[in-house]
Amino acid sequence: MLGTLALFRAMQGRFERGRQLIAQGRELMESLGHTNPLVATMCWRGELELVAGDPAAAEAMLNEARRHAAVSGMVETGAIIAALLARALLWQGRDTEAEELVDVARAGAPPDSRSAQARWRSLLAAVHTARGQADDAVAFAAHADLLLRPTDLLPLRADVLTDLASALAARGDTTKATRAAEHALALHTKKGNIAAAQRARNTWAALSART
Picture 1 (cartoon, rainbow, N blue to C red):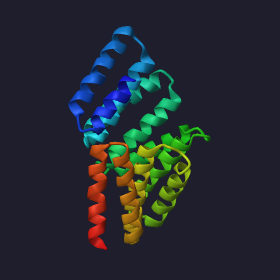
Picture 2 (picture 1 turned 90 degrees about the vertical axis):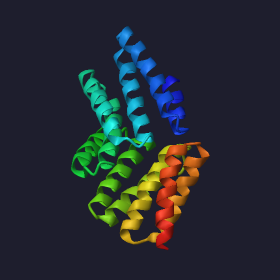
Picture 3 (picture 1 turned 90 degrees about the horizontal axis):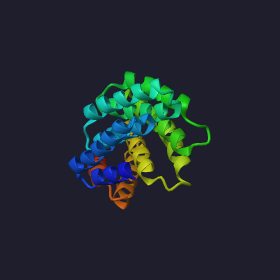
Picture 4 (picture 1 turned 135 degrees about the vertical axis):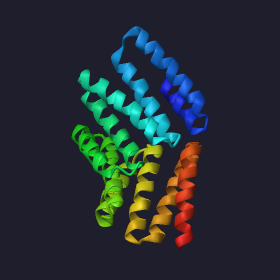
């Protein structure tokens, strides 16, 4: 509940309040010596920093979470952390390191989890886009979007659509890229994610200017 509230505050642009809430939760978990919830607070902080647009801060926190998860044998949690960390590295232009983490996320993704299966595909699409491999990028991002269509995982689908928009733009499909970016913006707006909506709006505006 605390993590959800903190991330909600971050989505509203109230990043410092979100950080305060997570710090309170972390302090409590450290005093109790509960490893799994402690790792969760680190993941929340990493996600918050991504929402805030600070990938370096996210990287530092998620690396700490990953170390704790590895020591505790938290394989599935480790895969989720790897995916978040891959995003932070991609935003810093470090696609080779990000791809290694995508492999970890892929290996730890439960076969029946649409979210986990979509997440690693979307991240791999972003890796391919960064390398100019547009056709592969579109294929992975489109598959990720297809996996999420029957779900109500709107924030994740918005992220996937943003990756799809970038892939389509790299391939030269500007019209389709603009539609995907516009859809991502609509989903972020619907969920009240002001910070992500602004990034999606910038992407949509840039693509619209090309058409």
